Image: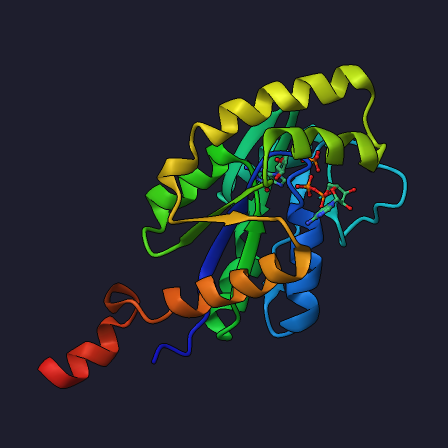
Length: 201
Ligand code: ADP
Ligand code: 5GP
């Protein structure tokens, strides 16, 4: 079967648990790579440059766009966010799976440019639970939470364009299921053309 890495796009509403599930996934899969995005937003307390994001100026980001250094990008809440292309290409060439945690617009750009990418959309068990998680996280004001819940409805409307839905009810199970989805995706004929050609000529 295909031993080369695949590009995985991981999206879902803020508060659905993307970060929590990915932390568990990477703990179990140290060979996989997380794509550290570039952003023009300011770091939040506890965030480190080069770990959570590459924090750059607007000028630098626009230069990255002009030079074709980002694989996809978007503007979100007045800031640029994008996935640096070089590290992704290098990791894939080494056979590593690469996970991009990005919003829906960027995900659709990836789908256009890389049809073989795997798109996974994370859902909370219910809308009420999403609200509880956002409130419990304690990182947003009530107004920001209301904004994120409205954004969640718009984002979930695009979930049918993804390959798989992942309901994050229990973190451990969701992380395990993500591993199973990635493993299954590597077995599709479209991602194993060379293997098939070896038989069919
Ligand atoms: P996202 O990265 O999608 O914005 P987070 O990973 O920050 O979401 O999770 C939002 C909040 O929900 C956090 O406080 C996190 O601890 C909590 N959380 C995540 N997954 C679960 C889960 N399966 N059950 C209960 N709480 C969860
Ligand atoms: P936050 O500011 O909360 O870290 O991220 C805001 C949104 O931007 C989240 O939905 C996150 O998934 C998305 N995001 C983070 N990095 C990228 C990126 O490189 N590209 C795109 N398109 N979205 C991103």
